[in-house]
Figure 1 (cartoon, rainbow, N blue to C red):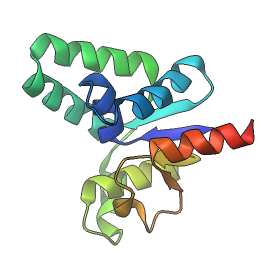
Figure 2 (figure 1 turned 180 degrees about the vertical axis):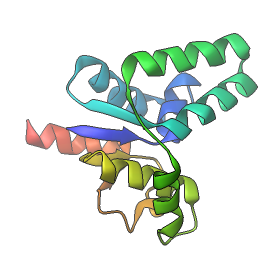
Figure 3 (figure 1 turned 45 degrees about the horizontal axis):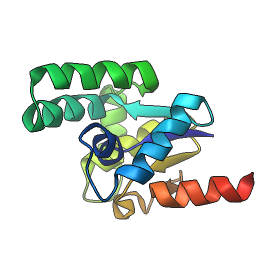
Length: 139
């Protein structure tokens, strides 16, 4: 299964944010093992750097970027993606960018803690817990 991870799921792991850490870390682990093929939007990378630098320090921010580059594929975000995201309904431009990325890369789902921004997506959105439950029922 090929999935796109929302920024909040990645930051839960990198910043060890409870109470979401366990489920988000389980998704990350499945990506590391190759059970899931994980993707990030290019714009997610800038958010990860910003929040890691702010919450910890510059070195941690660089480390976070490298870990993400080592673990996940990155969906390109260019003018075409931005224009398609702007044309989508909904209030959250960042979520729309991720929807467009997931659609263009033919991904099977988006993993997020905040599904309301993905309601109109043609790609299903899952919370980490929902995806873990679905994977357990499929095995």
